[in-house]
Structures are given as structure tokens and as C-alpha cells.
Image (cartoon, rainbow, N blue to C red):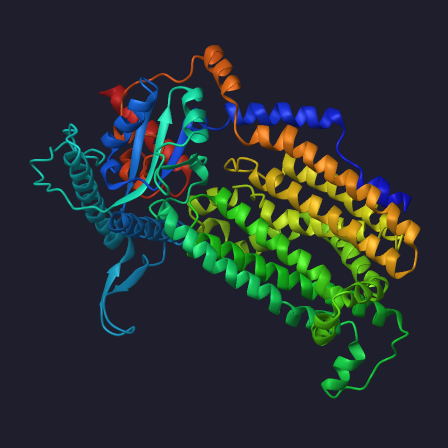
Length: 618
């Protein structure tokens, strides 16, 4: 009983909470040093009415509410055709780079050739890859320039803005009229971004009701630009809500039918039954290898199932619901991944008995308490094996990065470094990314198991001690020296969701303890179990009141103090697309890639030196 009371009433020390409060407040106010300053001053506006779906109209709307505090405004356009041309150009660029790499490694061989046109691998024209795709790049550059200019011209004429004279193309000095550019009707989305020059104005826009009309001008904090999924930015918020509800029904149904893979996993512990089913003679169940295989096989299969499930959840958030940032996808994946982890515990405990005894449960719901009391001791071996594999096994793999280096080694064997383009080499140097939605749920699951079994199987505390001690050491090293986070997630996954799931784990463990003691006819111990339950509720309420709610948004008082100290952002009044950090990349010519990279970076440096020497001689 004492370990449960101690663990249930355990909360972070006041020092840690104060430190977290200060650091979290600093992040909400100023962001990190490596993030753009505009990130802290930008909002995402959803459900824009038709009359506000232009840059000038959106700018004027917020300028009227926050005079002289609006810096930039962007309304996102449907640029699918332009993006398709850019993707086609990128494929042509990479084809040229690969062909150049081949000719540099094998200069004595003919240049690569490809068959263009034809049907079902028949017919077509055989062409030189470098020459053909170089011409394609030039053609696509012109088409991209013309289509981009047409989109911007139509967008500008829609709200009577001044049109730039020069085309967006690099090195193209012809005017719009000379190219005979005509506006292209481009659908406009209901999503926009507004950047303020004052932090107080931004926080006021987030915390206040903007229009007073339901489903009209909904405001959120803007995501880090490096984590935005640009292809999803034009999806309406209403559509996302509808699709999210549909997928949520699918996941709930999946949890109900998750008993099928769980039953398969638990059945793997009985190897002789499996061998008999396939017509193989039974083996000695007392052998050491039998116990090792029977204990590890279910754990490994369950881990494989969870990886597949996680990939499905992430794909649903990215490609079906189409969230607009990687941070939203990560938070969504963490939420449902953790739900399935919780389902794993209960389904493993019941091992199908809950569904087999459904009729008796409907007649007497208290039977579920007896089922849990009977199942808890028997399932402890499975959970101990899971923690051991998750600790001793995964720590070594994580520190050594064997999967990551194994994939890299396989790629190098299939394509030696000399045949790889500079782009491939640069991509290989990019450090791996931490996916909190993949990493956190297994740790919370172990925390739930530990809390559940502490008063019943005290030995589980040692397993948990080794697991969480190793987790702290390993992941501290990985986060500081191995992984890199390319975008800021805002802390939703690691604070909002994680804290709620940890408290749910504590509540579940305390409820099971009270029920278990009641079944074992120990009313005194069961009554004592209500003490940590009440203490947990009080701590939960206090943290929500004093930390979580104040940190959801930056207070106007703190925002005002920061504005007075930092003077906010400079309000340049320039609303051109090229100068907007939250403008769509396909509309910003300065960001595009128009020609292949050299075979190696030193080739480019040598060419630059030759040009410089020639200029000096002249």
C-alpha cells in the first residue's frame, strides 16, 4: 500500500514546476533562438468569409481592429497546377544530377539514355538523358514563371494591388505585358496567416472572439514555417473536422476489434499449441530456450503490430484529415497511439474473456472486477517481458543507431558513394528527427503497468526502475547529440497530451487497487486507497489551475511587458509575396531550385574561382 500511496501522490517538485513555468512562458513569448521571429507574432486564420479572402481585405480587417499593428497578411491560393509543374521540374533536375554522376564515374561508357513516350514499354523515342532533361528544365522554368506570374497577376487584380514589373523568373527581365501574361482564375481557400508587429495584438486576436459569428474567422497560433504541410494549407477547417470525426469512428471501431491481434499475440506464448496446429511434434516446455522464445515472441509481434498501427494513424492525419502542420499530425498520432496502448493493457488482461462473458457482464456488471482480479497476477509475466525487451533490447539499438546505419549501409552497397549525387550526400547528413508520437506512448504504457502492479507484484518496481533510469540516460544523450528537431511543435504533444495520459494512468491504477482489495475482502486497505485517489485529484486540479491554463496562451500583461522591452517587430508595411515568410513556397521565386546541383560542391567552387580569375585578367 505504501508504494502506491507514494507513487500516486508523487508530483514534480516545486522547483521543477517553477522552472518549467518560466521556460515555457519564455518559449511562448519569444520562441527559440533558431526559429524565425515572425513565428511568435503570427496567427493562422480559418473559416474566412468570401469578402475577406484577399490579402488586402484580410490586412484591412485586422488593421481596423488593431491599428498600425498588422505587419503582413496572406490568403492561401489553390496552386495545385503550379505545384505539379514544380514537382515535374524537380524530377527532371534529379534525373540530370544522376546522369551526370554516372558519366563522372564511368567516363568511358556512353551517357545514360532513356525512352520517352510510347505505351506499355513499347515504342517511344530513345534520347540522351542529360540533353533531354536539360531542355525539359528550361521549358518547365518558363512555364512555372508564366503560371506563377499569372496567378499573382490575378491575385493582385482581385484586390487592385500594384503589380510588379519584372517576372519572377531568375534572370528573366521581360515585363508582364511583353510575355502576354493573362490572369488565371485561381480558387482561393478560407485559410490565411496574419503577422503582427506587436505581441499584445497577436495574443488579443487569439484569446478574443473576432467576429461573434459561429464558424467564422477562427484564430489559432501559426505553426513554425519549417513544419507546415503546404499541400494541406488550403483544406478548410470544416472539412478537417468532418474527416476527423469519420476517422475517429474508425479508430474506435478498431479498438473494439483490436482483440483479434491481441489474442493472436497472447497465443504465441503457447508454442506447443502452435506446433501442433501446423503438424509438428511438441517440444520440451521445460527447456530454457522454450521459455525464452515463448516470452519474447509475443512481445516482438506486439511491437510490430504497434509500428504498423502508428504508421496508419500518422498517414490518416497527413493524407486523409490533412492537418496543416507536422506538429498537428504528431499530436494527433500521439493521442490515438496512446489510446491503443491503453487498450493493449486491458485486452491482454482479459485475453478475450471479457467478450466471452459479455452476457454475464450485462446481467451483473460487477463481474468485471472479478475478471480483473483474476487476470492481474497471471499477466504480470508478459508485462515483465515487455519491459525487459523494451529496456535492455531497445536501449542498445537506440544508442548504437543500428537500424539507421544499417539502412545507410544497404543504400551505399546498392549505390556506391561515387555514384551518388550531391543531393543524396547532403540528405544522408541530415540528422534523424524525434517523433514524440512514436516515442512517448510506449513509455506511458510502462508507467501504467508499473502503477497497476506496484501493490500486487512489487518486483515490477525493479523492472520499472531499470527501464525509466535507462530511458532517462539514453534519451538525454540522443536528444542532445543525435536527433534534431527541424520545427517547433509548440509543446502540445509533450505537455498537454502527455500530462493528461499520465494522470489517467494514475487514476486507473488507483481504481484497480481499490477494486482488487475489495475482491480480496480487505475493506480497510480498499478504503485507504481513496486517500491517494483524492490527493491525485487535488494535485491534478491545482496543476490545471496554476500551470496548464495560464500556459495555454501568453497573458496580455506579459505580452505588453515584452513589447515594451523589445519594441516588437518593425512594421515595414511591405505586403509583397516575396517578402512574406508565410507565403506559399511555390509563389516565392527566391526559394525555388531552377537548375541541377553540381556533381560535388567543390566543382561549383572551382568554377567560381575560374570565373573570378578570368574577370581579374580582363
